[in-house]
Length: 240
View 1 (cartoon, one colour):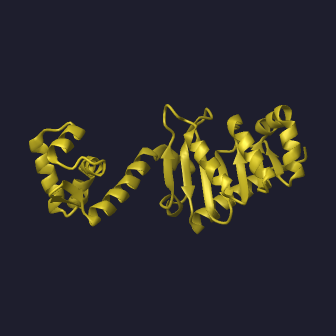
View 2 (view 1 turned 90 degrees about the vertical axis):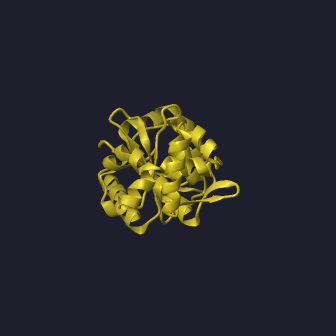
């Protein structure tokens, strides 16, 4: 355990070396630390087998590469605490997720990433609590290209699309898209893609995106399919 804590505290050194800062002076400049501190901490990591000194400076060992990758996932999970808490899923499911918090200056970037996954999917079933107009055309284009789609939407979202983009809704319906409307509040945006992939957009109470979670495990798929079916059961079919 002491070794794990040491590596976790020195994670910045692994990031510095991975970024190409391999000699002590470069690592010291990258981290803003003194040369003596860097020498001491790199020595600790070398003793643990995480880094090694070569003629070109310090580099990660194979073991160190594995440690860095896993610690990176842990760092992302730590940053995504709000997302994980909001999902309210079993630990077995949450432990298999990948989390990407929304960034302050690019809050919608996580939405675009799910859109990219939709482009490679043949089927999608989704929960839509919030509408992002820039991506409406993307989804519509995929439907026209043969995407098998079904959506459960909050009533205000569906009515907005019907009033402002009725032609797109009519065309999508004619191409086989099924729409359901619910008066309940949908806690998350959800995309069930093909047979196994799951994408979740998590919102705060004001409708702002906290971040994205993605899963590709059977237990996660079963959990979120049950969530989807529960919402669909309490919704009514909408015919444009």
